[in-house]
Image (cartoon, rainbow, N blue to C red; front, top):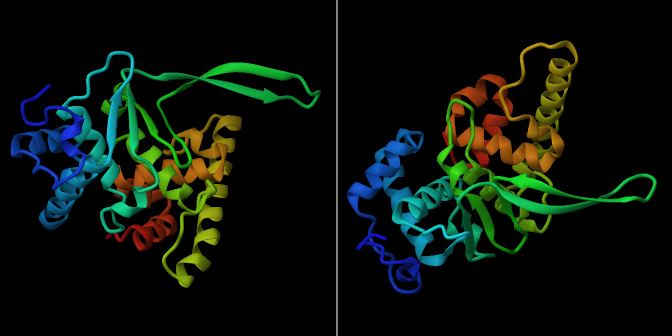
Amino acid sequence: MSAWWEGVKVWLGGAPKPIPEPLWQNTLAHYPFLAEHSAAELQRLRELSARFLRSKQFTGAHGLQITDEIALAIAAQACLPILHLGLHWYDDFRGIVVHPEAMLAPREIQDEAGVVHRYQEELSGEAMPGGPVTLSWRDVQGTSALEGYSVVIHEFAHKLDMRDGVADGCPPLPSRALTRRWPTVMQAAYEDFTEALSMAERFGGPQPWLDPYAATAPAEFFAVACEAYFVNRSRLRADFAALTELFDAFFGGQ
């Protein structure tokens, strides 16, 4: 563990410690989509990340040691969606649990005949309503602008969505105008995506760019689309122009 950080407890209470320049630059180099923002936005993101680190408690699972690299990689990506919204959007929880690799979560479903099936699902991350965020460090490192993938942004998008108590693909919105637009634009984008995915699977055509997991529910479509928006906005806009403009209005983007 580095001499700078000296453990997560350094962030609990008091003013946030400034993020050292070498560590910040290393984070931007590993996650270059962060560096695509203006100098003013990067400074804001750096300060917000320091405040985020002060307010959260990181825990490493299965022997994983939480290092500066791990903590800042998560903090910077988590703070990107709230850059213009504010840190209070994450004030309903404190804990962040980081696993070395994907997690196996117990699941239980009941079929139409009433038979209960129990199984284990492999997860790269999970956000609990009012509870902690769990992440796989292996998958955090796999963030990819080319694939529109960031498990950190995905799970923290769920946190935004859950802010009103329901994970339905619609976070609390700041205006009546946006409240009117949101369901129409989101529903159209979701239907276009699921139809394109169905056609590709049925006839063997090209797969849509977004992760197929987005088709499982509107909440997952929102989270997957948020990943793409923040790591590769121009590519998302090519397929979902109206959705990108909607996200611009909500997140305070371009």
